[in-house]
Image 1 (cartoon, rainbow, N blue to C red):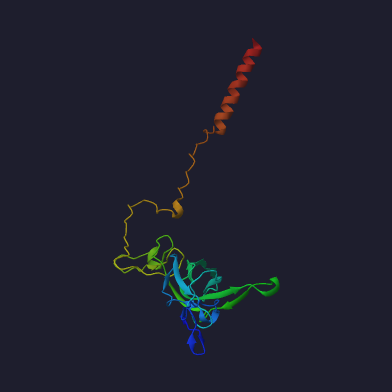
Image 2: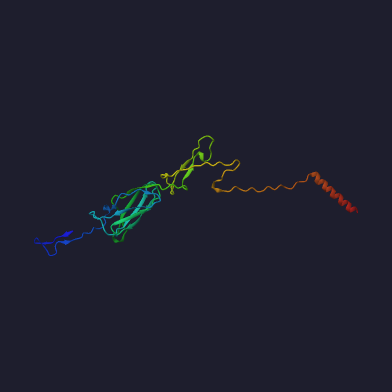
Length: 238
């Protein structure tokens, strides 16, 4: 700016003067994102930049503005605090890593100290909360599930149907990316073999069957006892 000082219509010595006008303090209704928030992906870090302005709408060129941010999933109600970075030039970076797919609301507040040492005052920024859509992440084989009647029983010559529910690592419903394919295969089990056990459990070992000793018949036992008695009598007679 240029400042002109006149005395009786005449400029004083040094006039006009160069004047630099600095922006005032941050005014919450005038602060907000530098651009609309781009879609995010579950499990992938997203970010946006806030621009701080004073009450007249002037862009601030200094740091020291305290901002708080929170990401809220509208479907589940889960809230996540955003990581805030003061760039020192009147802009604030906000980073987040969502896990739930679907619409979210991003709340941003200007935090100012209260009078007489009370609790800080949080004032919503202009337009807050901001809409953010989170897409599901890449399909995860470990989180996806297969079901349907065809998963366990089928009939020769007839169609068997298996339903696969694709999920990402956070169990959000996901879709295959371009170029990805879902492959199903059928393995024939040799006749007489037992089906594979779920969970990798090994089959129980059978204990060997030991045959009991042969039992003597009643007649054989009586004959043996009589022979023993006769032998004892002969020994006594001698």
